[in-house]
Figure 1: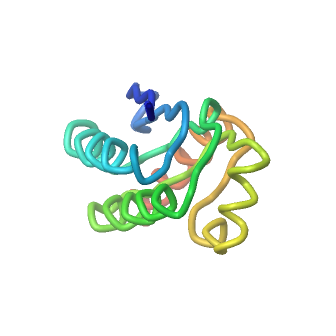
Figure 2: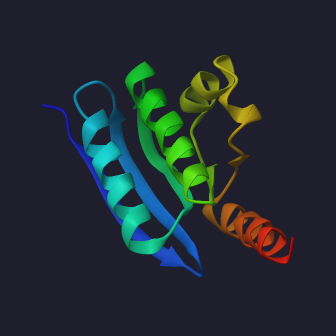
Length: 123
């Protein structure tokens, strides 16, 4: 039985979606729907908190890529926070870290997102 724990909170203007469990073909649609709903309700400055994510396959990567596209279309940004070593390897293997910043903690991601949002609003 595949279960994916999802929750959303807002810190300043950043929308933080916490992902727990396994992100694979059985759970990818759950995250996709959750992310789109969070963007609609709270805005396009999205941080995926991967602290509790144990596994991610190509289906999960596709959801992250689609989330990146969705926030860009709405003038925002995406960051990944606190992925474990296994998830980090997958992200690096496909080069996703070149487009989506990866931070060691949620607080570091929130700080970086605030700076990025401020630059975008100023420029």
